[in-house]
Image (cartoon, rainbow, N blue to C red; front, side, top):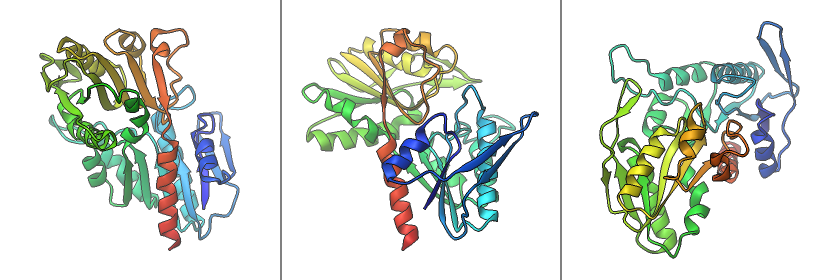
Length: 318
């Protein structure tokens, strides 16, 4: 197995390699004055099972577009030089939010990314908590593996073993995600775990209409789960409705913490007691000393991603 990390500053690939008891393979990354980059593996990939780690979130150095192109360039280079299989390990997959057409001339971002990835010879894509798992699987023709992030949040749920517990979705689109976690937790607790959903309508990027809660939440600790948090508006709206419906507390859990502009103020509001995200995206946009930072918790998804890679490599070796 060879493993390359295209985002060494984030530290995810380094920690992942450590979990797998593997060394990261060296890369030459040369940046030109106009913004182009040359990315060259410094080991021979011929005949090997190769994993390229690159989370497609924006940071101070690169946009999601930059990171996608870097992933494509390295994957193509590895295949050109004889790698038997290249797996893209993409903890956060950008462009997945637009997975269906709702207006005339809408793009299908997830499908276009899939076509690019497949065109350079990537044989498998591993992601953490796709925005829409069914759309993710349907977009790609190569092998895919979607890791459910809720298993990283089990420790949070375990803190409330003695209390009534409800798993909630902040919108209709996340119902399946919440139901899967509810079923999983019911097995762990060997007891009943409730389910709730908050209705949401979005048009032209604006959420409107009443926030109606379906499900019994009065007196319960509510675990509000989503695939990502960007502005925080969806989670805050849902948490407010849940508290008004009688929830004792609301803990917001999201696989990917993007925390774009406005999120720090929104999520600092008291409707949400705690915000828990995975380490797929570093929470670098959340300033120290803010109300959000005080209630932010990072749960590691590293063992889940490492297990997926370990299983994949074992299957390749057979």
